[in-house]
Amino acid sequence: MEARTHLQPLILGVETSCDETAAAVVRGGRDVLSNVVASQHDLHEEFAGVVPEIASRAHLERILPVIRAAMREAGLQYNDLGAIAIGHRPGLIGSLLVGVSAAKALAWSLGKPLIGVDHIVAHLFACELSPPPFEGGGTGVGETSVVDGRVHPHPVPPPPRGGGDSGAAASNITFPALGLVVSGGHTSLLLLRDALDIELIGRTIDDAAGEAFDKAATILELGYPGGPAVDRLSRDGNHRAHDFPIAQLGSDSLDFSFSGLKTALLYAVKGVPQGRGGNAIFARDASMLSDQQKADFAASFQRAVVRAIVRRVERALERFPQATCLVIGGGVSANSRLRADLSALSTKRGIELRLPPPAYCIDNAAMIAGYAARKFERAAFDDLTLAAATSASI
Ligand code: KG4
Ligand code: ZN
Picture (cartoon, rainbow, N blue to C red):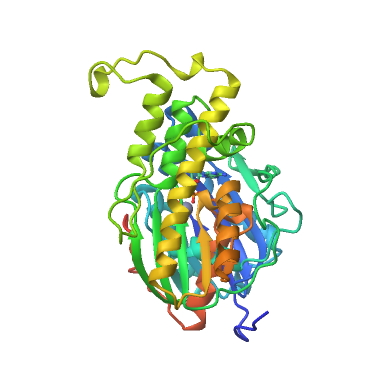
């Protein structure tokens, strides 16, 4: 394994961009000493999506207990830290502001460097984190709930079966690399010339891949967040039962589109509606489906999303033959079929594949602290004017 640097900074990472309040301590961009994630899924479930105002209030309640838990788990004092890193963009502005304010206050009061990290870029560097100590995707700390201001860890559920190299040892990205971020808010292809020189080469023109999975789960009445539920159910389904469309977007496009696919699933499950928008009336709904029919829809939908992604990745690899490493990140990179199909693609093309362990696919702060080490090496620090921003930096 390549020795990147003699610097082994201890970095506290903080992440509050959406509906997870997270803090982690990582040494040298690799060793995860703690990884606390307080999920808000229970608060948003009844709305089938994240409610921004509820999210920011929950971050406010949880941020300090979560940071304290991360420091305690790591067995460190605040003065041991080399820097404080914060995911400051993109995301929900009210949520981001909670984390950015906390990180600035910590950096200022401790006299430590502050490092602002783009959440999308951090997802790509999650593959460089050492895998959690036990298979199942947990970190020994794992996903956490916060009740009455106290943090209660509980085990992370096991990853889906057949999910590619879920427990593979972490290796550094080799540059130039092609990056794919597939999450609930973003679907982007990136060219990484270097850790700090990253160019956006393709993105979704409508829904993100994770959003498509979440909407599919709503149509199939599987609950929120939908990606893991669709992934699980797909195992029992026939992926060729339905032939869903894949958007072409021109022969040289590296962009993605998932909204047509979502509508195709909606009409296949519920029938073509009478009327439009809020007045649309459907003939059927998912409650009329058998378990097998639901599984067939889930598997066929998942196959279409994954095929759309893999085709674009293949096209990007043809366009940028200098890329010898393929790096994946974001919540949807936990998807078992996507992992398996991208593993097959990388073997076919003879390029290296970097997949994060499942525990680091979904939003977490270890990836923020991990990527911050890359910035620390170059003294790419921020000052207290660092702003939260809803858009990505690339
Ligand atoms: O990266 P992430 O935690 O949050 C954002 O930055 O958006 O991604 C969350 C998304 C959700 O849409 C969730 O349904 C999806 O990732 N997801 C999955 C799987 N696990 C999480 N999608 C498909 N298959 C999965 N196994
Ligand atoms: Zn994310």
